[in-house]
Image (cartoon, rainbow, N blue to C red):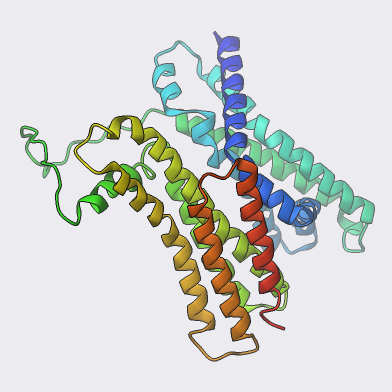
Length: 366
């Protein structure tokens, strides 16, 4: 049973990772084609915090070490619902699987994620050892040991994350103020001007936040990244070139609308077979849901307009800001309107918009 359970968990994890890779295929194409050199540079410096910690006083070293450990264990935490789905948890709890077998399976699954990540850290560490900077020479051995220790601790933390997910939920004592049970009375069909927004909330908004669906969290992170990138771009700290923040703003803004439109299209495909028999205008509801995918992008554009056109120019060009806004708005509309494009065509559209927005934004401070 132990070996069978271990093999099952490993196969389940491989299947989950393949599904996750397929779901991110188009997004990865955007990122790799547009920001491939940046990712290569990030790969080269991924081991820098742990190695640099060996040169700092212990409070700073501890903070860098802890940050690198948490960062290395973050992929398992983000993928925990895919690596160990709720349905598998439900039927595997009654099985006669020993605690040792469960911990071993969790450790093996965590190793599937932390292992390749450790290879990336090894490449980055080898690059720094080959460069052999002056600050690394006196503490090279300690730097390597700290990096290895952080990866081992990340593996342990990832294993603990999966093990905690497998624990049965604690029983809660019923509240003394709970409502008395009563007979279910179905609500009538909604009419009037608020009917479509109500059904949009019930059939699109709420499903994106419930159960194992991560669309709501994904869109929130993309929206936060876009708003933060715009703010830092206009703040333009001297440490990082402003054009890089402009590229991040363009990337997050376009991915925000593209991912939202894709999620709505998938939800429409699920609803279409059953909604045809419902007493509502399904086509109007679908058009409303498609239109609402533009709202997050419009929030980003409004934020950019407020920070640029809403105040006096301080070293940047109002004309460039206006052109950026106009092109971004057209690109957002094109992503939603051109729904019949092929996958490659959509990749080209989004990537082209990101490149053009980055080029326009690079002139903002000139």
